[in-house]
Every structure is written in C-alpha cells, then in structure tokens.
Length: 276
Image (tube, rainbow, N blue to C red):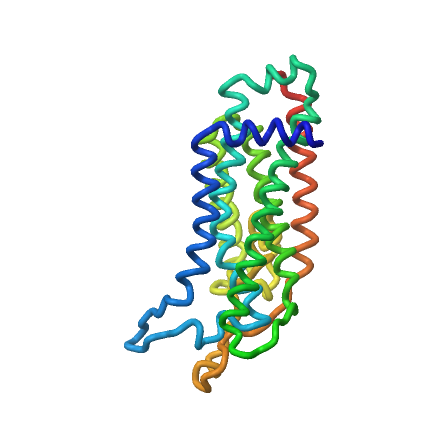
C-alpha cells in the first residue's frame, strides 16, 4: 500500500496543474473561514450579519460549513481527472502494466490517493468548523451534535471522486471527462424536472422531503447528503438564530454508499475488459 501511495504521490505532484488546483482548494477553504464572518450583505435596505443570524452557532454550524465548502470539491475532482487521464495521454499506464503492476493495483492506487485527499480535506474542514464555532460561540459550549455532517461530507467527496475516476477511465480525455460530469448533472436535472412536473410537485424540486425517485439518482443523492440549511423567519424577528438544526438523511447516505461501490466495480470492470 505504501509503495502504491508513494508512486501516486510522486505522479500527482509532478504536474504543475495538480499542485495549483490542490493549493487553490485549501486556500479556498481558509479564505472562506477567514472572510465569511465579515460578509454582511444588504437585502431590501437591511444589512444582514451572518454571525448575528447564527450561522456559526452549534450545532447548525456543522451543516452550514460543510454545505458551503462542498462546492470547492470541483478543484480536487479536477486533480483526480487529470491524474487518471494523464496516464493515457502520457502512456504511463501501459508502461506500469508492462513493469508488472496489475490493473487492480492501478485502480487501487488511484482510489487510495482519492481517499487520502478526502481524509485530509475532511480533517481540514473539521478544524475550520471547530475553530469558527469556538471563536463565535460567545460563551456557548461546544456541541458535537450534528457532527455526522462531517461523515456525510467525507462520503460526498469519496463518491464524487470515484464517479470522476470512472468517467476518466471511460472517456480517457480530461476535457471529455469534465464535460461528461456536466452532461450527467444536466441529465439528472432534466429527469428531476420532468418527474416533478409529472407528479405535480413542480416548485419542490429542491425539497428532499417530497418523495421523488430522481432524488436518488447518483449526483442528486450525493448532493442531498448535505441539504441547504433550513431557515426560520421568526428567528430573524426575535434576534435569535435563523438556522434550524436537522440531521443527515440516512437514506441518501446508504444510497450514496451503494453508488460508490457500484462505480468502483464499474471502473474495475471497464479497466479489466479494456485493451490498453
């Protein structure tokens, strides 16, 4: 395992583009943590202070931060795509196989690298969330209620990277793989809209409480792992937190876990059957 990880790590940081996107991702996380508290948008002539609105209060901070920073996963996804597609364009995959590496070891090394990046990212987000919560707790005690969103964040990234790895192996070109992600996402959005209209749930596409089968499509399911935080208007009127605590929807967690296993199997099947 150490040998495979060392090989992948050397490949990963050999390319300037992967170093840049890795740096951009972690800088983005730090920037979000630093400037978020100073963002005070004005809506309808009213200046909104997200600190006063309770964005950083426990336990809702676990959901709020993970929902926000999950957007940055595209930077790490690009790294995964480039790492795999470069193997085809540079001929290193064929050379590795000639040198004795099996296809199973090749896929394992790619997945292992992805899991390490996800683990580092999750720990990074955990400490950022904890620090922000402590800074803006205002005498309140630390609460780990809602910390399950960290596991949801971990799985969300693992699934997305496995999905990206599958498309990279399928399409072999980085541009095509990234385009494939966009096309798949649009396809799910179209299916979801059609189902919503057909079942007279139009206007509730983003409401994961309304049952739509399309909510359980691969990208939609992983997206629903960390839903948009619920807001109560009365909190704004009374000067309390406007964010409502809610737990992870475990049905999406289980489905996303199954999709992750499915795409790992499909990636291995594709690699095994393909003549490289």
